[in-house]
Length: 380
Image (cartoon, rainbow, N blue to C red; front, side):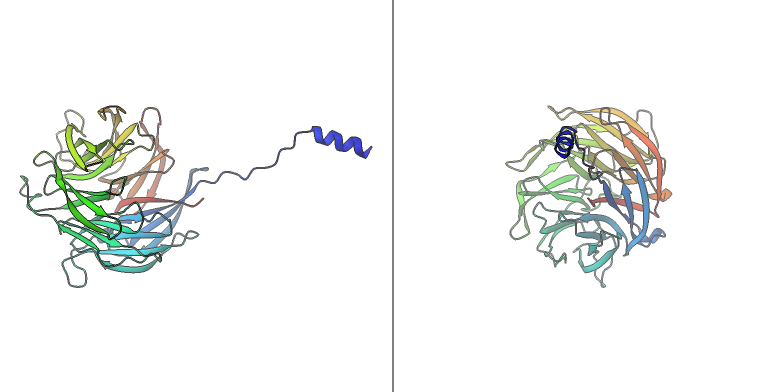
């Protein structure tokens, strides 16, 4: 009888319970502290249940207007967008250790950003260097980052020079964005004051910058380039121009680090006559769509991307349900788009249609004072 039962059991399929998939993220929010904020805020985001848990102030620090998380996921870095740091005409860069259980940030080190009002920070592809754009200083700098997360004094520095046609906004250089290319051979920076995308050769062993030949790609006079996003192939670069509310497409020669201007499109609907400044630009992880934010029209504009030519075709404009959408971020799964509405103190969550690129509000709104930057950290 026992043998019969064992044979019977062998014929019955056995299903073992699988560990449920986990999709949790920490969401960090940079803010302007001169508008009632205390610093960097954190949320726990569970994509399986689509639930958010407010974790409060992660760290108190002055004007952490742009954030970046290092490739290891252990450290977070903030630029402190101020004009004075230790009595010098400069801002600062602050390094924090991340407590993945609580979302709290412990300060590790702080250094001068080498220029006033730093507004952007990114990592090179080795994760050993942080690159910073200083807006009012009109320069860019590179900072070594140790294995302990501490940021050191600048290893590379380039002062931009010149001006452009808008006498109020382009009286001098205003570096607004900097990142290394996919192969880590070049660093590209967008300078709003010069109407240029400056290209520097990046030495990943020394953390230094040397002007490329040619040294820049040129925008239309008065465009005011702010941020840049590459398409999925890396053959095309899209620049959102703050002053003219346009997006300019460049071809990119990765071998020589050369940008060639192709065409421009408006970020605004026909007939709109109000004032507007663009802010952020992102390519969807699937490579099919491009998103940009309008401050004034208070919308996210969506374009489809032609995978062969890089050409943009308008999909539509979507209200951000708040005022002054400075920054937005697409979650790592490509499912949601989070918009930071600076002047209504909220972050509005939209669902992205992966087939059309269209946005639908989820009804979820996160309350944060003066939010200006959003970053995700995967927990599992």
